[in-house]
Length: 325
Image 1 (cartoon, rainbow, N blue to C red):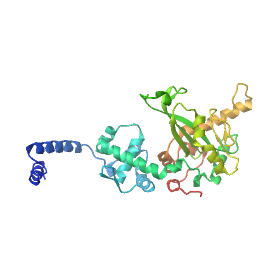
Image 2: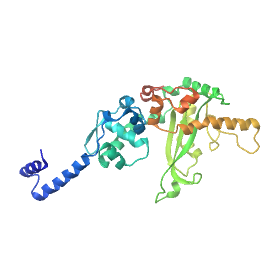
Image 3: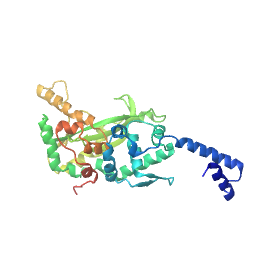
Image 4: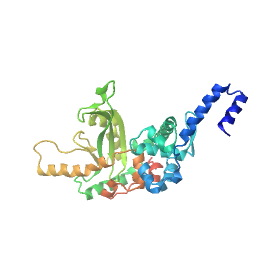
C-alpha cells in the first residue's frame, strides 16, 4: 500500500484528523524509508573471511555459541520490540570486538541507536545473569585438584621453580575519562590516570579462573585482593593441598600466594627466581579477559595454552558448568 493510500485509510478510521497529521506521518515515513536504505545485517551474506574480524568468532561457531549461551530464538526488549536471538548475539559480539559507538553499529546492522542499546544491554544482562559464577566460583570441573596438578606440572616443565604453582594473579586499570565529581576516587597515582581496577587469575590453559571488580582506581592491588576474598576461597577449595598462585610484589605473602624476592641485596639464586617467574607471569597480560574471551579460548587454542601445552575445556564443558558439588 502506498503512503498516500495508507494515510487516507487512517483518516477514514479517525486515527488522523486531517492534512496536518497526514503530512507529519508522511514525513516520518520518509525518514523511515531513508533509514531503511542502509544495509541491514544479514548473517548469511557476511563472508567467512570477514566474520572473525568483525566478531572475533568464526562464522561456523556462532550457532554453537548461541546454543551454549542459551540465547533464545527471539528476544523481547523492554520497549516490547522483538529481535532475532542470532542478531542480538551478533550485536553484542560486534560491540565488544573493539571500541565503537552505537552510531557505528547503526550503519552495520540498520537498527536505531535506541534499539541497539536495548539489544546490547539485554544480551549483557542475559550472559551475566546466567554465567557470572564462572568467573567467581572455584568449584568448577576444570578447576578440580586433578586439573590443578596438571597446571603445576605444565609450569614446572617450562622452568617454574615453584613445584606447586597453579596460576598467576594480577590487577589491571581500565582507563576512563576524568569524572566531574570525586575524581580523586578513581585516580591511580601509580598509573597517573583515572580508571577502574580489576583483578584476574589466569591458569596455564589460558582461561580466566577468577575475576573481581571493578573497584576505584586509587585502591592498591593488595586492597583488591583482600576485598575479593579470593585467598580464603582458594584455601577452602584446595582443602589443605600445598598449591600457590604467583603475583607481583604489590601483593602480600600468603599460604596460597607467593611473590618475588624484594630488596637490594638479593642472591643470584633469588634474582634467577624473580626473572624466571616474571617471564612465566607474562601470560596474565596475554589473557586478561572475561566470559566471552574464555569462550574464544575454548574454541580456538590461545597463546597461553599453546605456550604451556595445556588444553582448555571445550565450550560445552565450560558453559554447562560441571560443578564439583
